[in-house]
Amino acid sequence: MLIAHVSDTHLGYAQYGLEERENDFMSVFREAVEKALEEHVDVIVHSGDVFHSPRPRIKTLREFREVVRRLWEKGVPLVVVPGSHDMQRRRGVPPVMLFDDLGVRVLTTKNYKWEYNGVLFAGFQYLPRHRRQVILELLRKLGAIASGFSGKTVLMLHQGLRRLLPTSYELSIAELPGDFHYYAFGHVHKPFKTSCGRGVLAYPGSTENVDVTEISYDKGFYLVDLSGDQPELSRIKLEGVRPQLLYEVKPEELSSTVRRVIADVSKCGGLKPVVHFRVLGDVDRREFEKVSSRLRGLCLKVRVEVKPPLEEGGEGYEVVETLDLKTAIESYLRAVMGRDADRLASMAYDLFLILSSEGYSEREAIARAVKEVEGLYGVRSSED
Image (tube, rainbow, N blue to C red; front, side, top):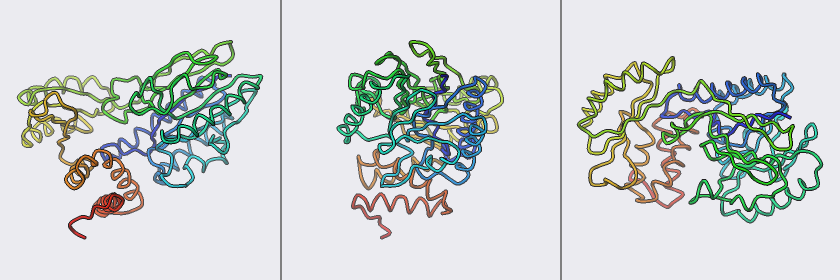
């Protein structure tokens, strides 16, 4: 059997508030599916974070359905374990479960195995670290099923491993059952593979750059041939990923770097790149606007991340942009909540995206998102 192993597609993510970036995530997913079909795969497995939000826009669901219909018409099933972004914070149905009429198989704690053409696929949705004992018990159960199965076996999980995420893992490789031939993992956005159990464990990584820290990673997926004694993996690169360029400069070098940026942009091909500047030192906003103006029309987005001189050697940058809603929300929450802001900003911004997709104006969505987070943590805004 030939499998395409895809993960972390984050469909519907309007990165930096841009519709173009939302379209990028869907475009590379389509490319991955087309490349898989060209390779005549028997099954596509998706190891979670199909969508960026557990409540994707109708547009995103419709476009996903079109891609899944193409697979269904070709007779290629899609098997999914929901990831952390696919799951409602409270009880609810992951959106990927809406497509069972097109043959999409979703593995969960209630429906954790599926057999297809003599191959066993087993797994379940993302479970957070505080449910480690539940994860381990489920893995013992799946290991017992795999040990008694006569054919090839695939374990699908969306979890972090200690080897890759030492501060935020749920499992170690030693805790995985050893009776599977292929371990199809998701959650880590950098491609990775290693020997495990009776075969190979792999993360294909994300299909697009969800964060600036990923832009050096290869974007693609794995072809997995299970016909031999050991799985054979081939890497398939995605060509339609939008270029992103990163420059680390001093404040006085910002303007002089533009010429080099223009030369680099000219080599990017069809898609306008996203350009990131990391500046060690204070930047005058007028200087940033001047640089942004010179690059306007050549780039999709220009971002400047500033590390103030007093924090030299410390962690983190402050993003300075003409409009960066996530940074604005984070700055406000930091003012009223202190250190908790770093942890809660993503929650508020994700809620903002959901409310925006439901028809709220930008101002209403921001106000409601912030008020909801404040309410959860007992903080009231000055307007109340």
